[in-house]
Length: 430
Ligand code: EPZ
Image (cartoon, rainbow, N blue to C red; front, side, top):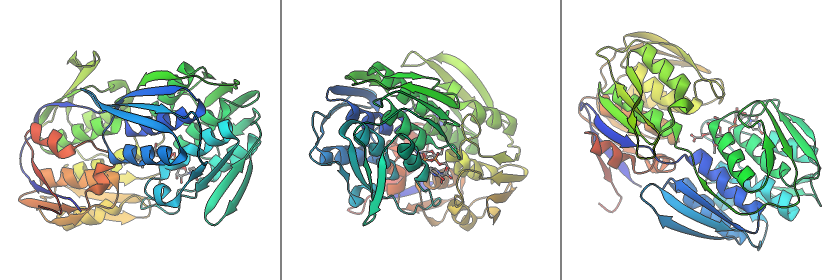
């Protein structure tokens, strides 16, 4: 298993180009199951979760091809027919987002058999709302041998209220409803940019979706969908991770190929903490505005509470905690989305951070010097926070199990090295 060896204490400086969003590319790939025509996705990040989903789609009998492009990959997917509507445990256990095949399969093929995802490092993460919504759309749901089965001749439009706002829940039901008989209204739906991006793709495929990006989404079902070409949005969490890396090293970065408007809550918080943000500093290589970022001399400790979009994202909580270890004063971090998302706190404490965790609240006292140590990643975003801590620490930090970070960050060590970090990947074979 690969490791990262980081020598800390270097200020980051330069330009970094953001990859496409993993959490937009994954649902977009499953949307291709809704049509027998070709769906072409561009700006797809080269991360492990994308390869895992591609294996699952091929397992289902879908044809796909990948071409390397200047920015990300181009993936062509054609679900002309289906060998078997089964998402096996071996693949689903690697990536919970595999559950996103459920809605499209039952909507187009009338049946789906998907392994139940099981537990996760950051929380219980049930899929009860996905299933409740499919049942409301007229599917028959049953369970056996660790699998959920969904069956329906044709789904029927309905009204569904999410007791808890769910990102992939919204995406699954939105996809399923595109081929339902009649109109579906999803209330208390997720508003994340990735949900909006999926709706944009589906509408290009001939769906009739309105209201994506709000808590109320209306989907008028159609008989069939066609192929389409779509460029996936940039990864706002990757962009925010790099901005936090600049802040924790007292650096200066120009972030290219991102959508600053997707980062409002994060930028507002980082500005309050004491960094200078220049939006639209220049024109990026994707024609969009760049984001320039200059860390101040001092970081102020500030509380944060994670929320659904457009609030402060839970996927930035760990990185923000690492930053707060280098801020003057105490900060309270409240995690409202997942019940067990402070695994990184113990590893940061091993590097010298002063953190007390109590249920869904953590108190960070700073500024505390961090010293390099051998540490272990537990999940995708926790591993990103450990990389940030390693960049700020005195001496060498060795991070084990970086396969977690490869799931969602495209060659992060290369991008960091280009802006002045000293980080090397140590592979088992080295
Ligand atoms: C998506 O996960 C993201 N994953 C996660 O990113 C992200 O942390 C999360 O949204 C929240 O923003 C993808 O998009 C692939 P939820 P998802 O359903 O959809 C509860 C990363 O690091 N819930 O919005 O699985 C659930 O337990 C990953 O890239 C139910 O109770 O999250 C949680 O407490 C990690 N029943 C809350 O809702 C359900 O049926 C929000 O979860 C569904 C969810």
